[in-house]
Amino acid sequence: MSDVTAPATTASREARVHLQTYARQPLTLVSGRGCWVTDDEGRDYLDLVAGIAVNVLGHAHPAVAEAVSRQASTLVQVSNLYFTLPQIELAEALVARSPFDRAFFTNSGTEANEAAIKLARRHGRERGAHEIVSLTGSFHGRTLGSLAATGQPKYQAPFAPLPAGFRHVPPNDIEALTDAVTDATCAVILEPIMGEGGVHPLRDEYLAAAREACDRVGALLVLDEIQTGMGRTGTFFAFEPSGVVPDAVTLAKGLAGGIPIGALLVREAAAAFQVGDHGTTLGGNPLSCAAALATLRVLDEEDLAGNARARGAELVAALQPLVGAGVLAEVRGRGLMLGLETREPIARAAVAEARELGLLVNATGDTTLRLVPPLVITSDEVGIAADRVGHALERAGAAT
Image (cartoon, rainbow, N blue to C red; front, side):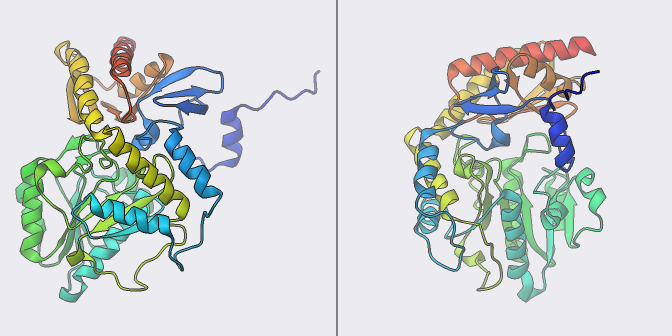
């Protein structure tokens, strides 16, 4: 009998040492370039997940790599007890391209939403307003405050009781939203396109009604652009085409091209925080801010919002025959944030079939595939993606 122990697999190694919180795909990725990633066996995949809408410049973009390398050899972290130039420059850059006046930096999207929740409570304190209205099916993060704002019981139930003072109403139901906003409301928080909830856009008139309801009682309108921001929908912010201007917006995911960062941007009239009200040790550190500045520069130089509009339109057109053939019920979204609604509950099976075909996609439910590729995707890659999506859906459907 051999006493040679078989090599541990990646999955078995992870299972021994990591909290089992993720339903991971059976895939170990080791490198990436542009819209492609490579696994530990040398196989390439066209990546339409992009770190869950994070890698807006694709993988290993030289501008981000160079900025991180340069900053890492200069100054990485000194806390917010002191001024640092990359943080100030990033705040200036975001204010210059937006209707907002001030920024606060965090390490993640859920932290940005926590900051927004605290800001709203602080803003409403003088008039005794503390309730926050959000949507059923929404997703704002997994820390307790942002989880309470999230309108999905499956995420909330294991951690009850959650912080009080949150109300949820159906998306795009103007009457329900208007009725829910009262003198006790300090904020309404909305995703312009609901991401984890299945890529469901909010109508422009709904955003306008939310703005009107907030103005009526003096509440803040906060838009969660953590997934939709940074040009993904074809404009820097997804709210821009609506003409509605919120009091605050949260960003994260693509802001630093893959380096962790989040941001809360606020109009001056809503800047209720005072010294000591909120803080973070690592938020806005020089490394992440340098990466974000490089990302913003490339977004502008390469007009990646414009590319998102053009390539997104091509992808929708290429997928539309699947709707006509009855495989898909709907293709929805904007720019390079698309949801594919399947007629049968085959979305999760299609993810596995796509992986076998060398394509990475994500399912947000049994009948919804989410496509959020890097904003640098080309027309040729769109063609490859549409072809592989079609074959993956065909195989998944045949297996049911």
